[in-house]
Image 1 (tube, helix red, strand yellow):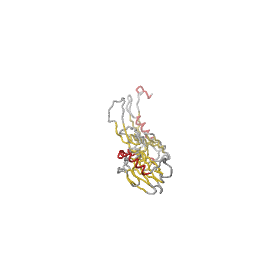
Image 2 (cartoon, one colour; image 1 turned 90 degrees about the vertical axis):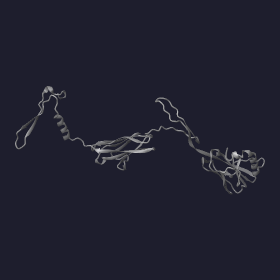
Image 3 (tube, helix red, strand yellow; image 1 turned 135 degrees about the vertical axis):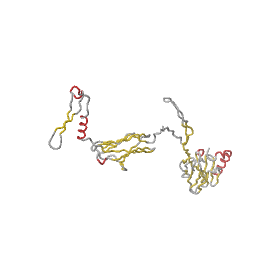
Image 4 (cartoon, rainbow, N blue to C red; image 1 turned 120 degrees about the horizontal axis):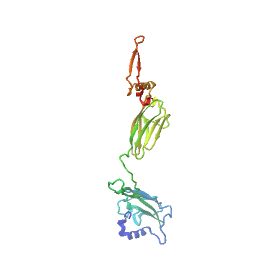
Length: 324
């Protein structure tokens, strides 16, 4: 039931008779749409519930009478309002345009509207369709429920709207905004290969970006490569230089948010030959079971110095197996 439909139902016959008298429809002349370039209503009008809809009809100076109808109900005839609905108002009635406005549109206002004109005793009409859209609204949804692992469960979600809304489900967990679960710094000697690793948990999957200090690292930098996977990003240095050492920031982001973590690439000194020799000497001087104590002997020599000899007094049958 459209605009004013409920108000004029008792006088439907009277309205139809009055409309016939108003336009003096001659016998045998059908009322058709598109017989001329006028009247021409606008294309279909689409508005949201609660907004205002404007219905325009283009006419010319040959038109003697005009009216807007909703189905069989007259809304306006010329400047005269036939509808008691306060939401329907006349916007313009000129030699070129005849338009009305329906305010605070609701679903029951949807439907066909007709612009009817009278010229040279020939009535003509043009029709426009009003489409009312309604924002989606969830009217019923399952309440919280507990269930044992492995059992089946049915969840219900009923929504209304125009056009009919599409309902989608998404599992929301506390870890849906991105968070970095692991970030590893590393120490690497100059000239060696080094890797900084950043792991993030996120739904949808996170996108990664790397920064050194405040400068973003761009893929393709000489000697540096970024390898990204859905939940892991690696910053790889193929030949670490002094310039590469420092603090780096890994940023993980998706449409729900972003997070970051700091990692350090630091210099790690390679063991020298003297260090290795010292380690060997330290190992050699460690007593084994079955080996007699180390004997220190001092021999005279020229000058003020003395020569010290170390003797390992070993008993062959007590040597460890791996010495044989």
